[in-house]
Image 1 (tube, helix red, strand yellow):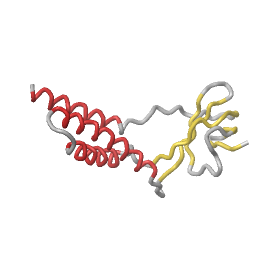
Image 2 (tube, rainbow, N blue to C red; image 1 turned 135 degrees about the vertical axis):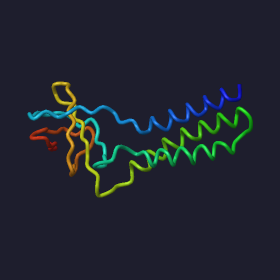
Image 3 (tube, rainbow, N blue to C red; image 1 turned 90 degrees about the vertical axis):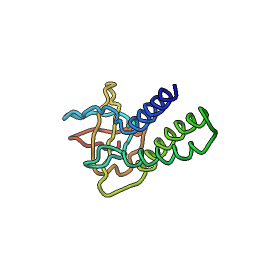
Length: 142
């Protein structure tokens, strides 16, 4: 029974850590032009598959802190919750760290209802909710 609990704890922790590596499916921008509203702006790293380091380090630290709480099955639950919380926090911290190898992924909800995603190196003064024009693979504020 103890081995089953340990295996379950490892599987849940691994799932929590790997979920931080998942990247949402992006819609591709068309070559045409049109107007719409900025749905979201994401900072992405060029040539980087995700925030694996921040997620893993956060998960380990959270798991160690959670392991210090309680005893028995309560300690196992605290370890799992700590690892999951640490993984999420580590992922967010790494996403907020800005670097020279970053670009922006701008998702626009077009007036037609279709979502288009444009990747560009600068966004000047764009914000979520801004009215924009998508033209030639770039987003311009109206």
